[in-house]
Amino acid sequence: MENGILHVDMNNFYASVETLYAPEYKDVPMAVAGDKESRHGIILAKNMLAKKQGVQTAEPIWQAMRKCPELRLIPPHHERYAMFSRMAKKIYSRYTDRVEPFSLDECWLDVYGSERLFGTGREIAEDIRRRVKDELGLTVSIGVSFNKVFAKLGSDYKKPDAVTEFGRREMEEIIWKMPCKELLFVGPSTETALHKYGIRTIGDIARLERKAMNSLMGRRGDILWVYANGLDTSPVQLVDAREAPKSIGSSTTLPRDITTEEDVRATLLGLSETVGEQLRRQGLRAGEVQLTIRNSDFKEVQRQCQLGAAVCDSQSIYRAAVELYRRENLRWQVRLLGVRAGRLVPDNGRQLSMFEETDGLKRQEDLENAMDRLRERFGRESVRRAVTLEGKKREE
Image (cartoon, rainbow, N blue to C red; front, side, top):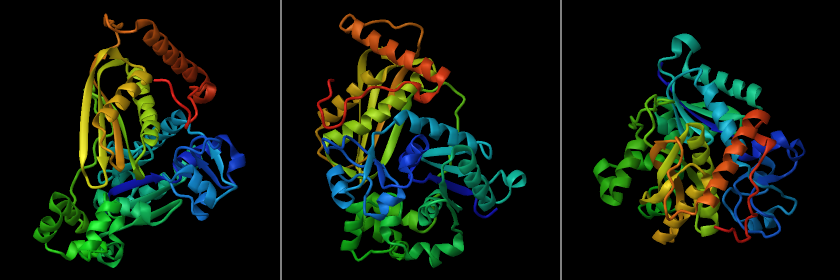
């Protein structure tokens, strides 16, 4: 098999999941966002009707409403998205044990060892596309290629509900003609820097000498040269390491840069919810929280703090992550955020710190454990956290 690396991207993921619960929004411009009345926050996702009217992911709500006054807004339900993400990964895992998440709605798959059972990479991609639609009611776009970078270019090439295969022949015929901004990790700042040197297409990057790219842009230029020439050899990771985890984390690569603390906090809350739920599901507690921040120029900061006592509730994790962010005071244009829980210990009963407010923490843990049990018994939507609307002061 020539092309056995797949990149699966769930189309308009948040918005598509919401329309499964509220079909009346399917045929109107709709976006998942914050509080319409306060007009604060950003657009997290939009459907195709909103996209056609110029609404963009990560733009302020007031700006989106100006473009599309009839835009309907739905608050985010992160527990729904996490559930559908897990169900999609179960479908992918029927074909291979190498399933590597890139974000909540994107995964790479390595199906080179699956040809005898399921066919070529393209045939497997078409089967996955049909199964996700039939079983989950969602659509995906899938790129098929010989490496992870070109597979992602393929999934972005045709949307929604499509499969695109990029082999070595398509590298020069199609990929090299694409704008450089289409290449993985080329954000607005990097694109501006490339344009300054007259580099406007992926082919322009590929045809330069490697030393020249390194001289112009340092390590970042070297990475982009490797990507543009189809030389990326990074493997797709196994779907599930069997050894006990040393840490549990969740991260998201944002479709556009965010700059305000309010937007950062909204993202950190969703990530902390995911991490807390995973800790409780695996019967673990965390004694450390780590925050990862990356901008579009590949600059990255990782900071961690130890907690007074090991916890498994999302609010404690969220508060620690926000404090780490405020402590850095970077004022960056943020492109990636990650929250990771470390120093994991079994949940064999909590040893309390003498400095800890034990009553409040115990109530919070009891609440989240009760929510988990109700969801397991009656479904994910039987109970939801009452989160203060965006734009209003949240007690921390």
